[in-house]
Every structure is written in C-alpha cells, then in structure tokens.
Image 1: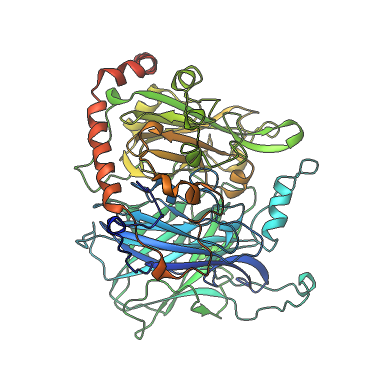
Image 2: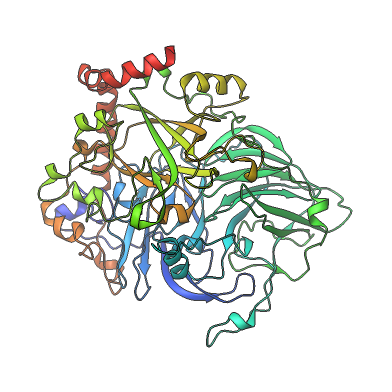
Amino acid sequence: MRLSHILFTLAVAANTVLAWQPDYILRISNQTIASDCQPRSSVVVNGTAPGPLLTFQEGQHYWVRVFNDLPDQNTTIHFHGFTQYTTPFSDGTPLTSQWPIPPGHFYDYEFNLEDGFHGTYWYHSHVNMQVLTAQGPVIVEPKNKTAPIDYDEDIVMMLSDDYHASDETIVAGLLNTSVFGWLGEPQNLLVNGHAPGECNETALSAGQTCNVTCGNNLQKVLPGKKYRVRVIGATVLSYIGLALEGHNMTVIEVDGTYVEPYPVVDLELGAGQRYSVIIETMQNPPKHDYHWRLRTMWRPTRVNGSALWQYDDDAPSNCPYDNHGPVSSAATPTNLNETVYLPEEKFGWYSDDFVQWNSTEYPPTDDEVTRVIVLNGQQLVAGKSGFRWSVNNHLYNGTTPHVPYLVGLYSENPTERMPNYSIALQHGGYDPLSNTYPAKLGEVLDIVIENHAGPTSGMAEAHPWHSHGRKYWDMGSGTGNFSYAALNASRAAAKGLPYLRDTSVVYPSPGAAYNGSVTGNYSDAGWRLFRIKVEDPGTWLVHCHITPHQVMGMMTVFMYGAEDLAPIPESLVHEFLTYGGGAYGERTYSYSTIPRSFFSEMKRAAEELRMLERIRRSAKGLREYVGGGRSAVSADRKG
C-alpha cells in the first residue's frame, strides 16, 4: 500500500492506467528579485516571491507537483498546518519524512483534506534558508461557507522579512565554527513581497540593475464591505505587530481554527502563525488612503514596515491576492509611527483569550494524558560547532540517521530503525538509539515547551514553536518554569483556551520588553503546553519556526505509531526509498504516463487505524506501557 505520492490507483490492478493532471504545478527556481528595489538572487516559486495562491476545499483529495529547477540545490515543499492524514511522506521535511527533491526532478505531494479542515495556511521550502522567498499562501475553503461573522470578500496579507544578503551567505555565517555570523535584523518588512526602499548601487553584482518600481503593497477596497483579511506570518525571524490606520479588527480564525469573534486594535504574530480578522470599511470615508503600520517586536532593534489600504469605487469585487502587485508609488507617511498606535511587548498578547467557535470539539481531559514530555529550547555553545540552538541539548543537523527517519522505517532492516520505547521512558521520552521521541497510537501527550535564556547573555527570546502533523490543543502558557499548578493558574487567568492550532509562541519572561527579558544564564524564561492526541503514524518535526534557529539545530522528531505504518508494495520499494529514485520523476516525464494512487486503500487503512486507536486507548497494554509516566503526571498535579 502506498502512503503518498507513488501515484497508482486501484485501476492498476486491472492493468488500466488513467491519464491525469496534478491539481497545481509549482516550479522552484532561482531568480533575481528586488522586493524593496535592491536586487537579490533568490529561490522563488513559479517565478515570483511569494508564489501563487493555492485554493483547496475541505474533504477533497489533491496532488501538487513540485519541480526542482534549481541547478545545484535540493528542495522540498511543506504545506504548513496540513495534517497529512494518510500521507506522511508528503510532509515536505527533508531527512525526516522524505528524501529532498534533487535538481532536475519533481515530486508529487498528495494529501487528503478531511471534513472540517479549512482555513488559512501556507506552503514553503524546508531546506536551509529557502523559505525566505520560496513560499506562498493557501486557502482551504469550507463546504458550507459559514464563519463566525459573515463577510463579503477576502484579502491575503503575507508578512515576510527582506534580507539583502544571499541565502548562502546567511547559512555560512550561522554555521561558522570560528566566527559566528548572525544574520541580524531584516532590511525591510514585506507585505505580499513588496516594500518601499532604496537601492544601493555600490552593492550590486555584475549584471544587476536597481529596481525603481518598488513600493507599498496596495489593497483596494470598496466602501461599506466586510473584508476577511488573512494575515500570514511568513517571516524567517521577525515577530510582527500591525494595525490599520482608522480601522479596528475582529479576530475570527487562528491557524485554521475558527474562534469566537474577538475585537482587537492590533494584531501580533510570529513566524508560521496565521490570523483572519474582519475589517468593516466605512460607508463614507473622509479620505481614500489608510496605511497599515508594521513593526518588529521581541528584538533588540525595531524594524518598521507599511502597506496601503485604499478606498476605490472601482476596486475589484473579488481579488484576494496578487503576488505580482499591485504596488503603490505613494510615499509612506513620515509620522505613521505616531498616528497608528502599536502597544509595547506584552507577555502572551491575547493568545490565551480566544475561545474555539466549534464547541463540540474539546481536548482530552487531564486524566487521559498518558505522558509528559518536556522540550527545553535554548542556545548553547557546542564545542567546536560554535553557537547553536538546541532541543534538550540535542541538535538536529539532518545527518543522523543518514536516510530520512520515515524512509528508514521501510528499510531492509526496519527493526534497526524502530524506536525503543523502554529506553525512551527512561530518558524523558527521548530514544537515543533512534534519535526520536516515540509514541504509540492511542497515547495523549502533554508536550511542554520550555524557553531557557542563553548561556552568555542571560537573554531570552520569543520562539514560535510549530508541530507538524495533526494540530495540538493549546492548553496554556506562563512565565518561569512549568508545573501543573502553574498551568491551572494560567487556565484560571485566561479568558479562553484551549483551542486547536499548529504554531504557538513561547514567550520570555518577565515580558516587559526584549531588553527586559534578561533572567540569568540558562534560567527558566517561559513555557507553553501542547496536548496532542497520537492518531496518525509517521515522523513529525516539532521545532522553533525561526529559520536561523532551525538551521542551527533547534528541531526534533516525534515518531508516532512506527509499528502501525502501512506497507509499501515490494515492487515500489526501490523507486520510492532511494534518493532520486523513480518516485522522484525527472522533469521530462509526461502526466499521461503516471498512473494515480491507491488512495482508497490508504484512506480505508487509516480509518481502521483510527478504530484501533480508540480501542487501544482503553486497552490494558497501553495503560501498562504508560503507567510509569502517568504516575509521575498524577503526582505532579497533586503537588
């Protein structure tokens, strides 16, 4: 049985090959772009940065073919926030879920969007710093089109960083073992790939010329309408606060989860997070032009950005996103920082105040939790490796194992790759033999992300943590060190919670400002609790979504249901499990020669696993397996 992109159907059994076309085609290439007028060689999608909008519908099955047109780099595409239910090989994480796509090859990402799965998402490369420009928005439309507030039109705002240094220069500095080279603050904040700026001609490479048409992203709107603005945090470093001149906002969506309408005057989000807000335009606006103000937060230096919101009776009635523009040549007001208020840093913002709109969904109870796993995220000095960011003092560097974790489970000797649960229970959930945090189907994990200050500065930072695979329940956050007493206090103080999401910020304490976050070397500086139902077999990354931190090793692998993975047909093993094998088609392949998948069988197998999971959750064997962890959890709660 094929779990992912090996595109064969049941018709193959009858020797019938069906011609087909992928739903979308993405081509990853290198191109010179000038988002803020300064030319830069960048990895782009379909020739633009960001790439095209992909629109799907819940309950449907899709294929996206990704061509690697880069001459000398691997690539992948990760669909951020997608569960990859039944398709763990399509998670787009190189050396975790799949081999990377070699130059001159393509890969067919396949996924099933379950009923109830909709909202705002995005796609991006998961190789080195390519995400800086290789990214694009995704909208998954609900079947019934209902929302907490009815609205007229969509607008997509992708927020990203702009760096003039090349990806290669940035990565070389981060991994330099003698002289550490931090990338520093971005030169600009981009909205849909645009920002006003000035070109430095002395910094141009041979053959480059300055762009003179850069400017603010322009959003044309009609009076008297309700717009759903989908704000996507596609930054590599920046935590951004933003507000719109003369308008208020109402939050209705958090990472693809509808929440009860929550009025705000400003929005804050870290890398990987998404919010939908409703903005109602004026019937008779006193002027035409209003500006968005953007500003970085939780960093030692502020970087400001802007975009233009323009009333126009001729505005299009339905234009949610245009990755080629439009761009306004009008200058940003010099007093924008005074006319549009943005508050200073505040621990947690409003993230603990949202209430899930669907009240029929609720998290597992405290008594259902089988184990607690604590992930300490902090900077360390790793001997000859220099400065690195780690998880529990372990670095994910993509070299151990030498084949992707998921592929290794299908190797000739899969027992060598199987996790050792007994050893993992003795090491806080971590199995040093497989370098993973394993869990069996049916478990309910409390994953505590603890934020620790650095080893030399005593400074803590705000880290957006992302969990691949199925969404977690955001149970709460706090300052200092974690305990269940602290969790209960957090719950009592919060107006909302818990709700499903896929990326949450672990804030530093005391939370007054970045420079107020000095707590002492290696000291506790904040925590957040993810509660995860282990349902889908696969290997799933959990990591900080600040890309330089990822490059430096701040990622770890959770291996769920390793013994429950569905088999791959023996005839397909070689082409699929080999780097650059037949499953990674050459770009000359024609669509008509590629048959479709065993999707019906995959889905049926997944449903059977779900049924088994429900049985296992009450089975004696599972209770015995997690017994040691449960007693520790209970003791902590009582304390």
